[in-house]
Image (cartoon, rainbow, N blue to C red):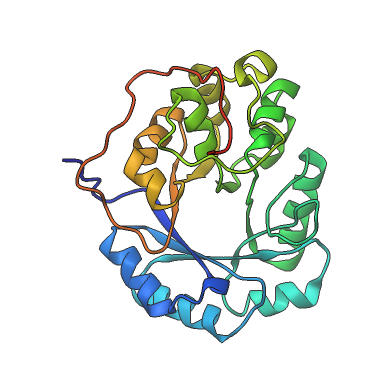
Length: 252
């Protein structure tokens, strides 16, 4: 039986799915999580309720939403809820993920300084591969910025060839030989992540059941961000040694 006490864990709740803020906070408490990441497309009273409830129980609270600086009025509204913001904008312009290089990271860091918030970088996982190959300029730019890589579980699926872990529908790197193309080995990833405060997504309940918390620790992530509602499995089956998938990709 596997029990992870005082887990380095955040619970992420997607506002669009309609969870009750109080239920999310209670789930975080039951799972010994250190905080809650509330993602929304629109700032509303539910985000305020979640933040207030988190503060009541001394949980870290992070608010995420799509954002491209500068937009002072957006940040002013958000910082009335919390000063810890996980903001970014993907290339399609409709999701709050960070899909950018070192120069873009510095733009967000400067915006955070000017506007008085703490930036949490919602990094997408292909940038880890690209930046490892390119020499780590993004890693250096991020410095000690807390990062959430919500689809980082994909790297565990590749390294351990564990098909119990979900595979994100990302065609930028999925199916490629990551060792040959980006030098992605367990040791190389550990070295890359070592100076960072970087958290991986758990792959929802399916990923947690498959052992993503264990894989995350072995890869060198600071902890796991997993979706609400979360339960702790009684037993986890995972692969002890890296196997590096020869063929991998989205589930059929």
